[in-house]
Amino acid sequence: MSSLAEASKKLEQYCKAMSLHYQLLGAPGEDNALFVKVDGGQAQSRILFDCGENTVSQLPFSEVYALESVCFSHLHMDHIAGFDGLFRQLYPRLERPNLIYGPPQTRAILQRRLQGFLWNLSGEDPQAAWTVVDVTETHAHSSQFWLREAFALEHPMAERALENAVLLEHPLYTLEVRTLDHLTPSLAYLLRETERVNVNMQALSELNLKPGAWLAALKAGTLQANMLEGQRITHEVEDLERLLLKHSPGESIAYLTDFLLDEKALSRLVPWLSGVTTLVCECQYLAVDCELATRNHHMFTLQVAELAARAKVSDLILMHVSSRYSALEREELLAEVRSIFPHARFPESW
Ligand SMILES: [Zn+2]
Ligand SMILES: [Zn+2]
Image (cartoon, rainbow, N blue to C red; front, side, top):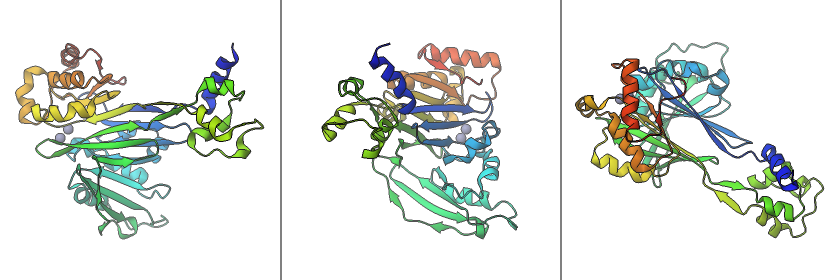
């Protein structure tokens, strides 16, 4: 093996590329939710999109306990029915903020939800706070609710303006939103990993440097002289800049559910979703039931396929399929989507 290939191999363990993992929760014809983990090597971030019945229970406690935020599309029962199970695990959590996002009215509905238990606790640390955020494309309105007050009072926080509908700027990703029409606002989410910084292997070899933990620190911008593991860097700044020449865009995942996909929505969504790696999308109805889809402000097969094809996404995962269909009809539904967008599939767990 050449020294360059050897170095590349060693690098993997030190500079693990950022990666996006996701798991579609819930069964076919039943409630669903999407769990996403962004793995930056040294740090991970976990987000849950919606919280239908029997979804969170499919995740290990450690993953639920590490959730950074819960993002609701909207608060129809089939998207929030599993919230009690989540809340039961997290309500006294102090290790990280308890954050919930959703469309307007989320604060009002969630406060009633948080209050809906008897809270005469003994032996619990009552310091936990829950922050609930009403989100539009232009603003985020937050309020806090405190366990020690049994969540009875709303503590409004400063309203935040969103630039380009970016809800979150996390070190590992950005999270953008769009408001869609489901006879009520339904939020679509798009998570994009931040740009990846790669090590220029050619430069590493030319500078006679060996891979090590110091490269991970270099990538993270936290390298200090005492981390160099005895190696000599002659022209410090120039050499380090040469090592980080390559940048590549990260992966992306979009979560879209419960809305009317008319021409207007399509023309807004296609450029937004253009080139997205994974589109996780509702596919409630077969084409034969298109009238039902339009009446209920849901989507049917050919629309979902057209959206994925026009946006040229790499991967399309279908979810939130109507409970009216048998297993055989669900296969028909997949075939209809594939007739236009061959890369469509159901989640692996189905
Ligand atoms: Zn709905
Ligand atoms: Zn729904």
